[in-house]
Amino acid sequence: MVWNKLAGKYDNLWVQKYSLEPTRKAVIKIIQDLNLIDSHIVDIKNEAGQNLEYNNVPYDGGHKVPIIEGTIISNDKNTIFAEDKNKKESPKYRIIDIGCGTGQLLDDICKTGIPCELTGFDKSSEMILSAKAKNIDATLFCADIAEDFADAIKREIPDVKEIENLSAPTQIESKPSSPVMFQKPKSDNLNLSNSGESDYLKFDLAICCHSFPYYKNKPGIVSKIHNMIRENGHAIFVQASINNPYDGFVMSLIEKTAEKADYLSREEFTELMKNKFEIISTFKIHEKWFMPSICGFVMKKI
Figure 1 (cartoon, rainbow, N blue to C red):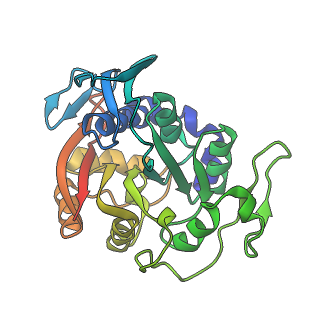
Figure 2: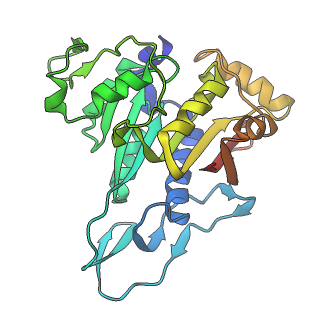
């Protein structure tokens, strides 16, 4: 698998500077700006908006919300949170990163101090090993959403101690010092919408950055993602998009370094999401003139 071969150098690829890193910053800013998480964000200042067109309006990188009485202010570099002393602890906001690679986005979210519960998975076992080596405060596992995601998530999300008692997975290790991960179990049971499933199969926000073009059965994948999101939940998709001849030329070159992909145009993506998600906002990542269209979509589950 090409992604296993790229895992060791993925964090240092040239696309990090002009595509992947700006995407991560934009996604974090969107989570904060839309108040998707039930926290009182007082002041957010970072560089996520420097080269970001958000709804075609340049964003200045700042956001302010009035401080609420009876709060404790804690300053963590770029973010200040105000939490009500008397507020009872509520269930954490649950985010899943689909095709998380080496866990860069999850790691960045952790570093912001955003209060949430994080889960990430990728079909590349080496990518997941690299992600686990970063000691991210997140549940990480290897699975292919197009094949056996349901069984994999049921096995991997419970407490690690409980996983040892499960019968199916076979342990594999790359190095003695590497974190242990499990081979993806083989199963045709892909239905995530059965009633009575445990709550760990549902998330408040699903994020899919740059992996969606590689999925072959896109309507089926959209349905699976729709089913894993709670009612009134959201999804953020970011992907390279072919909207003109130049986009097509550049992506044909990039495709040779990875695997075959289908880079939907904005119109094709919008049509695909119909009846599953309402697109509430769009944005573009455009760091340099030579970069192709990179389109983002913020959506609410219908």
